[in-house]
Image 1 (tube, helix red, strand yellow):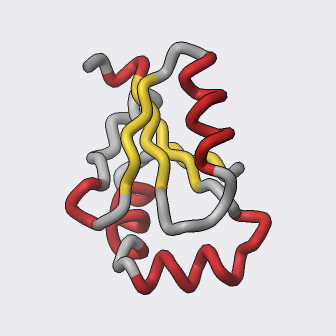
Image 2 (image 1 turned 90 degrees about the vertical axis):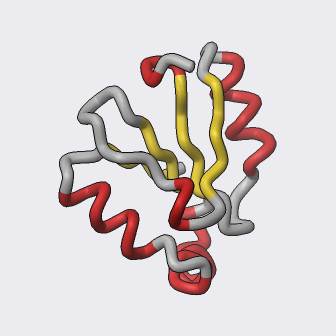
Amino acid sequence: MSTENLVYVIDVGSGNLKSLINTCKYLNYSVKLITKPSEFPKAQGKNTKVIFPGVGNYGHFVKKLYETQLDKPIREYIADGGYIMGS
């Protein structure tokens, strides 16, 4: 699978994942859900795309990030120059 057509979506039970996934697919992107730290991608500049869904409910979202231990891989990804988008 080409990283140019791949989008990673963080799944912590927040946001409307189905709508987001359908939109990504409509735009010809494949979607890989991230539910645990070992699934987090390595930053590869603009070729790696990570989306935070459900950031409108910020408190719940952040709580779930810590519960699933995704906070550390996210920080490492950003420190390595990775790009992130919130929806």
